[in-house]
Image 1 (cartoon, one colour):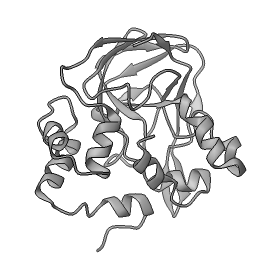
Image 2 (cartoon, helix red, strand yellow):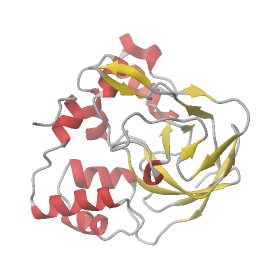
Image 3 (tube, rainbow, N blue to C red):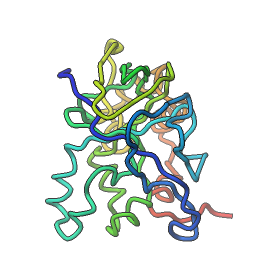
Length: 231
């Protein structure tokens, strides 16, 4: 992988009533200078929905800045909104995307060491943020989703730090391939690889196992639409 660097680092505070009466910390802001990252993410970064955001398996969200020009072209009336950290990312860079990043990749960033743990599964809050109904579903279907890291070794990060690939598991699947297997075409070989993939977060291994069994994904439509679960 060509050496790339951190272009931006971002944290967010919880907005109690972001949309539909629900809280969110998707509105991230740039962090100047050095910042500490621990097993639960960046110092000062908050998550409003701990069941679906944050925690050690989703400590850091990385999004490719290379996607933004395409989004701007597709939605020119909303072009100004498509810039980092528009997708609520903690880290942004050029030169990495869902095709070049693999599950289980280990990177050194600044003095920290991180491991790719899962793709980002988009939700309805992206539709609200960009005022584009169906955007979250489009993100899912095109795999322009970003990815999460778990933090193996806490440390400090700063803009301009190199992102160095230290290790890639043999035969690992890319983020885009994982998204396609679970949410697009049903490739049973890839689904089995995901189900058996130790570096992949448990919730994603379960997604692959459910799809292998042919079980319905009952929560996906609610995640994309923002509809509350049935009572």
